[in-house]
Image (cartoon, rainbow, N blue to C red; front, side, top):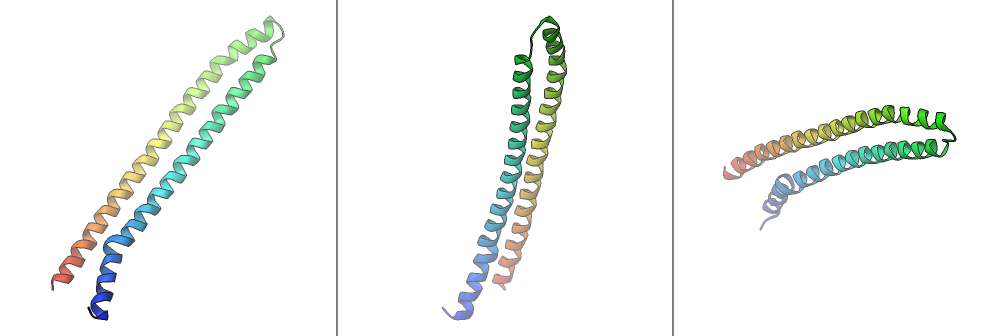
Length: 122
């Protein structure tokens, strides 16, 4: 096998297999990083709410304090519900973005492979 043929084969492997695999791995890693960041952010927010509610419960000293705490629970429940909705939308958007980018990557790789195959056939 001559150097030119070896170089051409190496270039084909790079363009058809290795480069797309690296690109997909980068895409997957970026997606995982964004998803984990969203999950950590959500976990911290929910932990903060839980700790704050526990502290508020410990501060109840009389009937008025209990009434105030119970009234505040409706607002807390509403805030958590809104946060859950927002978090679900954020994850859905991340998933949709990942799928779209993956599909574009697959289409681009298919076009490149077709061009490479046509070029090799000549």
